Length: 274
Image 1 (cartoon, helix red, strand yellow):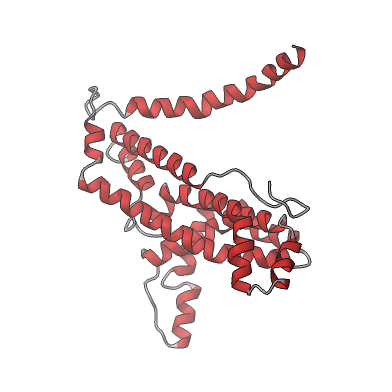
Image 2 (cartoon, rainbow, N blue to C red):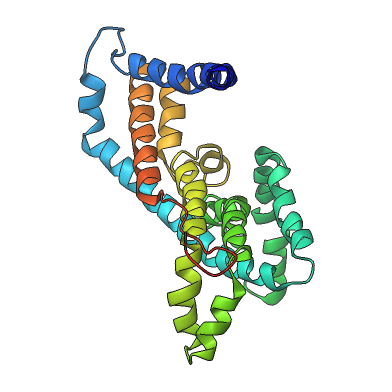
C-alpha cells in the first residue's frame, strides 16, 4: 500500500505537466475552432477546411513533408551506418548533432546569405561558367535547408538501432552466402526498422508544420499547414480557422505516429528477438 501511494505522488508532477501543456492547449484549440470570424458558434470552419483551397494546401504539405523525409532518410541511413563503423563514432555523432543546438532562425539567415545572388554558391557558379542563379525562393532551397536542419533528428535514432544490433547476425548472413543487398534487406533493415520509424516521426511531423523556413527561404512560394496557421492567426486574425487547421494538423500527427509506431523488436545481445 505504501509503495502504491508513493507511486501516485510521483505521478502528480507528470499529470500536472500533461494537463497544462498538452491537454489544456489542445482543448483550447478545439474550443476556438468552433467559432467563426464574428465570434458565433459554428461548424463553418470545418466546412471550409474541406474546400478545394485547404485540401490542396493539405496535399501540398504532405508532399513537401514526404520529400523532406525521403531525402533526409536517404542521407541519414548510410551516414548512421558509416558512423557505427568508425573508430570515434561518439565524437563524430556529437559533431553531427552540434548544429542542431544552433538557433533555427540563425541557421535560416545563414542560408539566405549562402544562397543569395552574391553568396558563395553563386560566386562558385560564376567561376565555373554557369552564371548566377536564383537559388532562394525556390522549392530546391526550401527542401535543401529543411533536409539540412532535420538530418540530425533522423541520424540519431537510426544510429542507436544500428549500434545496438548484434554484429554476429551480419557475419552469419554472409557466412551463409547472402549477398550484401540480401543481408541489408533481410537482416539489417528489419532489425533497425524501429529506428527508421522513429526518425520518420521526428522529421515528417515537424515538416508538416514548417512556417519560418517557408517564409524566409521559400519566400511564401511554398505554403504548408504551419504557414496557413500563422497567416490565419497573425494576418487575417481568424482564430477560428487557424484553430481548425491546427486541429487537423494534430489529427494528422496522431495518424502518422500510429502508422509509424511499433513496439521494440530489436535484437538482444545474444542474437535472439524480443
